[in-house]
Image 1 (cartoon, rainbow, N blue to C red):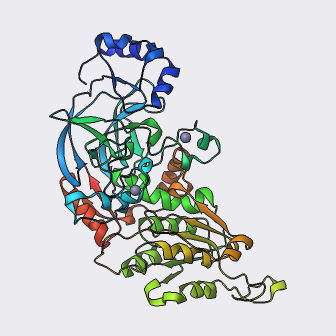
Image 2: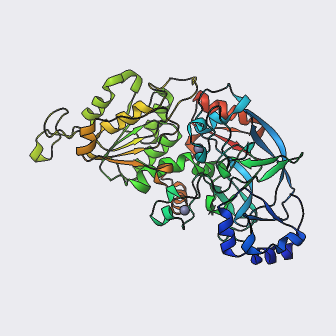
Image 3: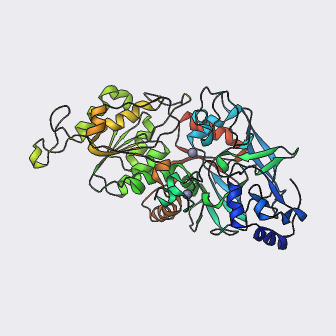
Length: 480
Ligand SMILES: [Zn+2]
Ligand SMILES: [Zn+2]
């Protein structure tokens, strides 16, 4: 898969491939067709796969953390030619999220049942003990977000140009697929699977992919433009990197899909990176109460600083947690026809929060701080449902949970609660990131206080351990 093509013939070659052939090829992404010399004349109608264009970065060496057979090592790789819709990005900052902990390989103690191990193959698997998913080449570069400078774009890229600073997010937003056209770009069908073809190779020629078609723990990223938003801001790359995943999820939860109302009572379970961002967004829209449940004491303190009106310790309250929320949201009167709230259980009971955001998820490794009451992540989902009032809204943001959730069937069926599940809290990536940046620039949302440690690429393992320890909030890997 080597070969070069003079710049002036790249465009000719790309033009020779009809749009239809490229779309057909996308269905079989993973097979290489390198346009090189005479190969560039392959008839469009018979093109078997997404073609590649050899450009000036092909063959460029860079370093990346590569996960392979349970091991993770910093390796030197060689970039492959890119696909027409891809961009080459020089990484400036990368903020690993907790899901990355299951991908630490030998950087961290072995896991049984890691988070990605619970996903079906099409969402990035592999299942424990099984072969890697067919569409995700193993080995691959770790990560699924980043911030950097565009160095090169494929001939079909429309929104980006070299020199742009971009946020690469975990959720694509193509604008053209069935889900984007249903106004649910958080479910964009490009996400998790469109770009699993190798992007690089080892010096011995072994092909290397990028996790989820994105990567991040790497000096260079190659991804489709649908995962990128150009940003025009003086915010630091470290701050912006949080908008690739965690903080964008937290901001989106109250703002993008379930539309938290001013004057409402909001409960947020979990005050990690996502929960702390959600608190800020709930405050921004004028929530009257922001009640936060979080087992880790330093995170409860951070929650209060960022806008929580009450913090609760789920370990201390145990089974009384839900009742405590009902107490806090009982309102000034029980007189039903004076707009009052009735206690639970009983006729006309309607206590509970207007909006509940569950931002807990699984806890796969013992933290240095307080343990959550249920590491599987199921209990807070059930509590979130019970904490919402009749016809209240509940959003689930956790990830990697182990098991099934059960709700009281009658309450579930008849009491009107609206349940939201959304990739990244319902984020519309291209629409929302620019407005979140404006709000950060205006001082209405705060990313800086979520960054509690920075690391170099060589210290990537320490950054993952920092996530496990939970002694802070967000680690950011910064590149020179
Ligand atoms: Zn993530
Ligand atoms: Zn889409």
